[in-house]
Image (cartoon, rainbow, N blue to C red; front, top):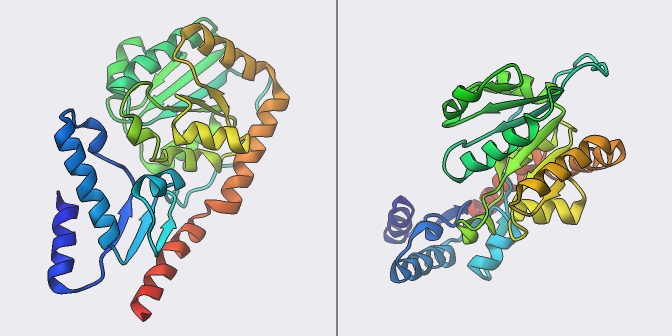
Length: 274
């Protein structure tokens, strides 16, 4: 509701309103159809009222409609870059990493991944983020649970991992996942590691991966499919190299922190000059 108060204050003071639309939240979680309609109306009205609008994806822009001064503003990654590491030997375990929310719909998805990876002692699965303590009971030499990590420690773990995992819940908050973009995906791309995205076809993360060949896509909520796809990417070095290289190149071209900051700052300056 704070955003609506800001819009009202801007109108009252007769100053330009600048808005950033990252998530269509809580629209996706409002059960009452009347409340949902009211929320969408208010968000779109604020969008139209904004002299300058930033949206996280093209899908978000389409959802909100036409605007004379709208710009795509991806999530900005941290300034930390991958650490240089020793080359792994063939006897080292393959490591998978997930960092993010571990509760809610993500909990069951993570349990399924643990079930798949636990079949092989040559795998390690690193889990960190909110509610990751729920997995302490299953932690062992192959399942490592960290809780919240500071940037430097997370950077180290991501640098050491072989595969980076992004999860998008199925059949939940479709409007949200069809318009937002996972900030961790922007962060992961700079590591030049194979990214695995498990989620529905309509989410922006899957569309990005499919259109740009930048990640391994698993688009069915099925344990057998999950297992087949994970083992498929483990065995296929050529695919690993392709998606890793494409994701890294995409980061270099579109997601450098300085580039994203320039989009924001330059458009603010143009508005001030007007």
